[in-house]
Length: 144
Image 1: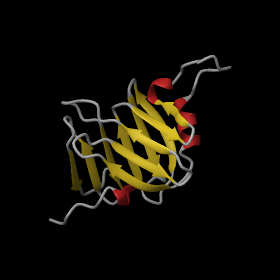
Image 2: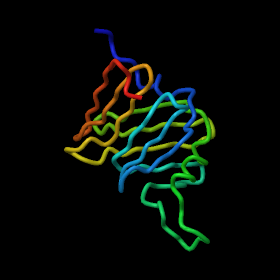
Image 3: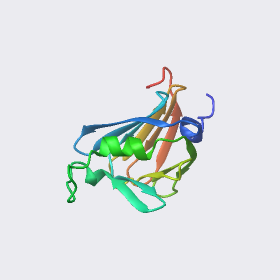
């Protein structure tokens, strides 16, 4: 069996082209139709100005003319290519940096539940397991 690919290869050089909410606390971030990141835990987008958007902001009014559409706003904020990927040791938190200076931070928040998973068209599968570990496989056929 071959060594699993690095998670970097699933994101570096790709742009986040679509964001979808598919459950009360579940979101999918698509990267150029090649990588899917499914998130089942808290996430936020940070810019040079600070926290620009969090998953809990979706459909909140905050005194604005209309409620926040987190899907639309995330796509706007992440409209650039990914340049760096970090998975934090002991927590499996995911940090994706974009060339426009934005960061997508995904917080693996449970000791028992999986927080996020990514899969790409080359067969990479990465799962952030409860408790802060993550596992990486090559799967055939690919899940994306």
